[in-house]
Image 1 (cartoon, rainbow, N blue to C red):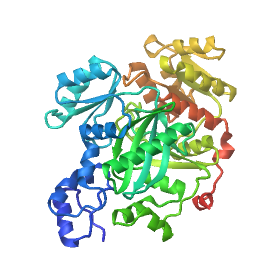
Image 2 (cartoon, rainbow, N blue to C red; image 1 turned 90 degrees about the vertical axis):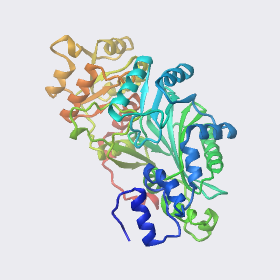
Image 3 (cartoon, helix red, strand yellow; image 1 turned 120 degrees about the vertical axis):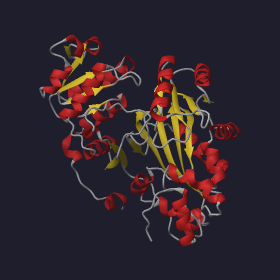
Length: 465
């Protein structure tokens, strides 16, 4: 039977009294059911799989940090604060930039990367005004933000003895963009074998240490061979359906049977679990609602904005990415002007993308700083004035229809006036707007394969055959 009822303690308890289940699964509904697990267990409701105590150990920052230390699992420098003064002290100790977030958040709500004391103070005032944030009832979590790190997601199942890695996904955007908004690729294209082995080992340590029975999702930040755990969630993540389609392994079905007492080996013997080597690349891309909110700045950050997801598959990672972008509603240009404006930290890596765009026959238009940098490195670009400097600026170019794509990477979370106006104009014009250097590089790689490969069609069953 299927019930359409609110996910509240009272409503769930009423259904339990009617159905009298052998176990209640809280691993498939995101954060909300996890928040109900303790109250349901105290009311005598049998929780299937991972215990409420283990869920708390993953959610409580201090408990989880102690576990990581005991297991030898590395984390970024971090701390908790129960007051604004403590928050400033913690930030001073771990150093900026800092990722800040309230406890037990949904969808990254209230999360932000701050780059200095002024931004941290402004964040605290903003959270108090918007959400009536009370740090005495739930501490603020602060983590050292690892710039230029790659974020990696892992979905796995643990049966109490054996670990099954469902999939390892490498994010296109750097760490700090919410996993629901970041494009991700499996198998991971740039992850070293040493980092992959460390991720597998840390996943098993944490699953065993937490006492997981069923699904676990862990987010890592990777710089070279250095691997840091960002967080662990003893539940199914939004990527479970994506990984199941990419691998042909029904993770939700297997996890359910594990939660009800079967082992992974028993499921193999029954033919329910058939593991296979993935023979293609799959890309998950977020569908973002900017067309519904034309005045909203489209910078991606730690707070989730997406309302859906699409999937692209190909033997070539670049083509899979292009297919996913097309599914998300972005049509990549084959000619015309690209407005190309980079933050200082992105200019060196952006040079590769700029050269490739010119080789593909696109023409670059840039503000003075980026244009000068490109010129110094032998890349031709038309220099135009900033929005505040008068006529002939990027905003006018976009509004005239003279720009086919925008690459605009802001510095940090600040939405400076020019950048925000340009990104909003691109959204209104219906042209692709890339706001991360990683996204720009992936987009260029997609363009290099041409439209013919992107429109090749093959069924999922054929890919998995």
